[in-house]
Amino acid sequence: MPPTPRRTPPPLPPARRPVRLAARAWVWRLRHLLAATCLALAAGAVVHALQPPPPVTVAAVVAARDVAAGATISSDDVRVEHVAPGTVPAGALSGAGAAVGATAAVDLPAGLPLVPSLLATGEATGPPGTVVTAVRLADAAVADLVGPGSRVDLLGARPEGGPGTTLATRALVLPAPAGGAAATGVLGSVDGSGDPPPLLVAVQPAEALALAEASASSRISAVVVP
Image (tube, rainbow, N blue to C red; front, side):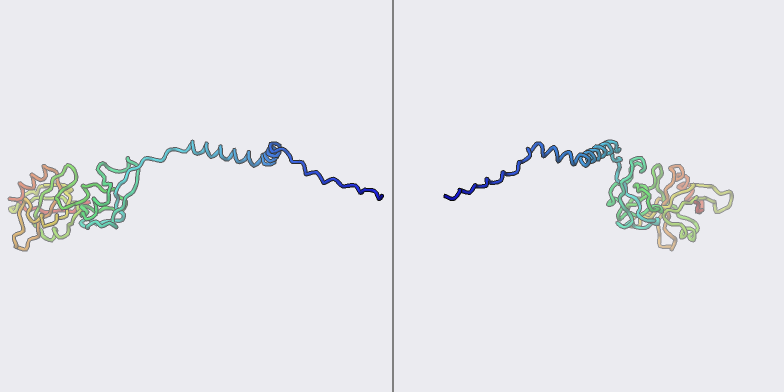
């Protein structure tokens, strides 16, 4: 009988490394990358912790561009900025709607925070501590030269001659409220004679009294001052 051929045993499957051992080997290979990542995360956390909190700000309406006294303020003339609380005056407007449609009582340079005393909203109002009165100037030409925002010294002189009197210093000329309120001021009204309407001015209370006393007996003139 022929010899029976030997059977070759099947190859053994490759031995698998234990999962834990494989993981340790993988970690060991990536140890430098993992260390760098941990250091970066730690540095980021330290930097974030050391950053100061965001500053406290308040909304303030400022002039977006130069606005001339007497001009009606439009939405393009103002913008809202968020600034430090100590950089805006008390009572500053915080919403643009409070300024749009109002009249600039004085020249408003770009960037100036707006407060109600800088605007004429239809009522005759001046800066805090002042009162508003109407003054009819003796010289119509001078009345044509001054406009809202001008500062004038008001002088009184008697028609019969004699020394003049300073009645008010640096009076602020205001825009006439809507409806021509300037034409019915305390010192008279336009009577159709062609005379210019009286000027609305913001003066100190004592100066308003002096102007009222002088209106009956003196010719009042204005000198434009810085």
